[in-house]
Length: 431
Ligand SMILES: Cc1cc2nc3c(=O)[nH]c(=O)nc-3n(C[C@H](O)[C@H](O)[C@H](O)COP(=O)(O)OP(=O)(O)OC[C@H]3O[C@@H](n4cnc5c(N)ncnc54)[C@H](O)[C@@H]3O)c2cc1C
Image (cartoon, rainbow, N blue to C red; front, top):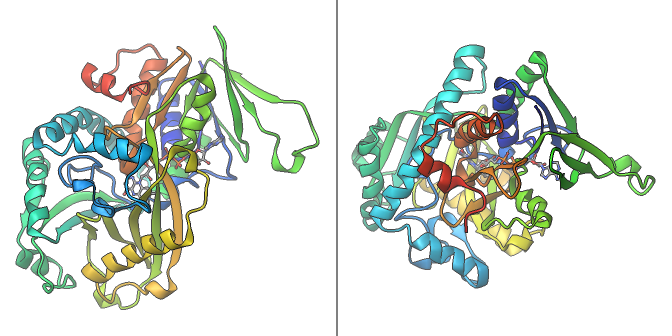
């Protein structure tokens, strides 16, 4: 079949990869001049979502506090955001948390298997390293972390729960004072450069053939017919206003993997996705003092801020601002951006003082989509020729190859290898 994929982020490239592997011809349409320019560009590099960093469960947005779980709100949770936070609160209980994580787990495993397969076949160097240390400040937070530790044991995820003294002994840059409650170390937790991976995978696809990339082209609408699916392209920037002809690319199916723009592309087709945009922030900082740089990636588990070394710089990322659906393209008020960047600077000073030269850091912000039930939107919706692979929240790097495999199996009319309850839970048309 000929399949059109909208979006050249990790979800789009993963989809192209899995579709090509299933024997289809693919056309990827990306509005930027190259791939990996959206949320994929700003990733923290964590290639597996553990129960500690999925965006639901006991520690996430607890008690509706305005900066709880590393999410900042300008006005408090009102309107749409209030409903969203309330729904997430239903997953605070350890049973609901465990049930939801168990639904996600087969997708995580499928994505990991696909990544391992790519690693084995191509030996790509995308700056992979092992080692992740989650640090927990307060004892109340530590108690709330226990259901996540229980899930790590249940799914036999290799990890070590560490006392504060063990954390400090493991990496001497972590300050013992002020006191903190403990840490969880993943010796084999993979950290890597997601945009580099995307570009290398595109290179592999270019060399193999069968995948065409239309970059600097923006899809303005999706057309669905009985036997065909098509996309309308906005005129290229240099021709804007000159031509009235609408350029159309047609195929047998369309996969929308357009990141935070996905709901906007689906809305004219009458498809509503109950997903919310989160604006995330990153500081790319020069190293201030080499001897203060942590040996391993550190994550402030409460604030969900990662401090990772990427080549000669430190990448500090997190500080999410929850927005309303219609605010996707609006600039944040300056004060809110400052709050977000301050939160990043604080986390870096808390756990790796002296490591980053924050005053010389370059700030970046990007958008990701989050669902009120914590799961991405994957599968066919609204029309047999329309598919979605989006809304992976904080785990697009980790989940995309698995969700892309599901989409490719559905397009190929093959029996999916994920359990039926997971597939149902991922359905993009759910409330
Ligand atoms: C600061 C930050 C840290 C993160 N850390 C991690 C992490 O450590 N681990 C992890 O797994 N995940 C992490 N994530 C989440 C992860 O980056 C995202 O889930 C993932 O990148 C989403 O990929 P995507 O392809 O769906 O979206 P994007 O990367 O946003 O790609 C969508 C693409 O679609 C294109 N597009 C949109 N509309 C159109 C259109 N109409 N026509 C043509 N093209 C279009 C866009 O230009 C864009 O390139 C992080 C995200 C952020 C922002």
